[in-house]
Length: 182
Image 1 (cartoon, helix red, strand yellow):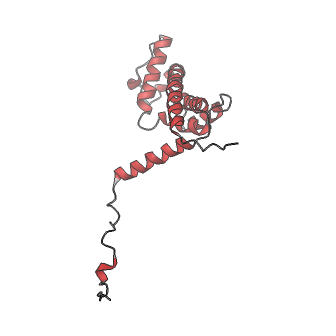
Image 2 (cartoon, one colour):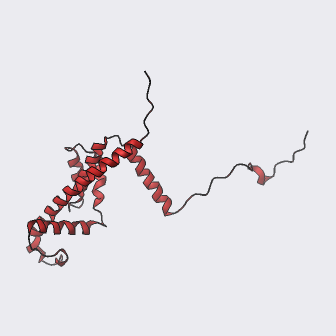
Image 3 (cartoon, one colour):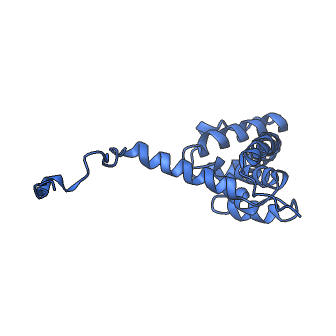
């Protein structure tokens, strides 16, 4: 019989078991978790790649218009007749966000003026505080909406084509359930 000494309080852990590795902390871990969460959500969407791409296109189209607060509703309503995924359509409206409003709407205004071949005031020269804006309102609104429609169609077509390829690629990476043999 061997005489083993009683275990000391510090040796309660087994010496061969490695404690958990140090965890990443900070902003990088937060972003990494968010990206992984949304990637898993994309993998679990049950729509076809075509329906997902149509939802992406409709949402991008609606996001190009200056209807603040209504873009998501417009995208979801448009997704119904186009048989697009409503969740993706709502998410795609974030193509225009507080960081991109000004560049997108400036471009749309310039494009609308180019198509109409009108010489309205420059976007930066409009005095938004005075009554002077009222004399340019209708021509500026028409130019902005026309430019938004044309650029929205171009963005929607691009979003559909790129989205279709991307969603098909994601679908091939999705684990397939095991087949039942008859």
